Length: 116
Image (cartoon, rainbow, N blue to C red):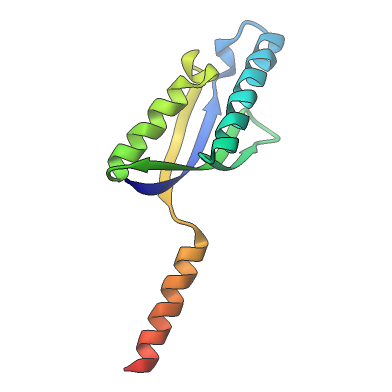
């Protein structure tokens, strides 16, 4: 299977929790699950917005094709603690590629143009 990378923008629906304490307790569960995914290599980078309940990340998944990989991503998000609560709202899940691949493409393109 091929590897696919996705940029994800996920908003947390804080109204799913009866109190701020319940939200933060559940967010700790979420953070621990994310640490496991980071160690497994699925999460490449993860950022939490400082001004709103939102998380940005780059994840790497395997799939038969990009649609299959995106389905795997959505299933994985729903399996997370806050996903099980229905509190994760995926606002964006865009396929991205490592910038190193783009740079290498540009280098190969430049080499082929100078050889002709």
